[in-house]
Image (cartoon, rainbow, N blue to C red):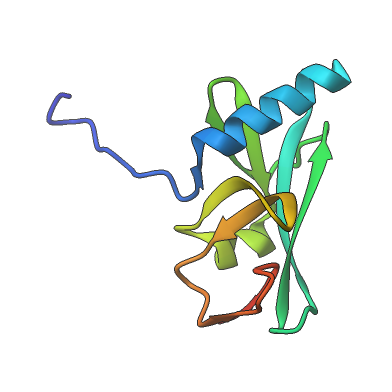
Length: 117
């Protein structure tokens, strides 16, 4: 790295498990344009709620994190609540799901799908 280059850490982390699962789902759909969109909405038992969807459209102001050809996309409103978070994929007794490990959350609900700041 030259002295002119500055290393900027990724504002969002995309775990190996999440990347693998998204890649498998994209391959299953047969649409390479798909990205995993993560968003935050009001509601849930703790005030805000995480959401996940697959999207083949990108907005000009979306934040995009790409790993191994797989894209994670976040809109500007949601991004402010997710900076520094890790998107993961977990399989357990309660089923399989994408999860968010958010250091900004003051409290989370028992299921981990909602939080407060």
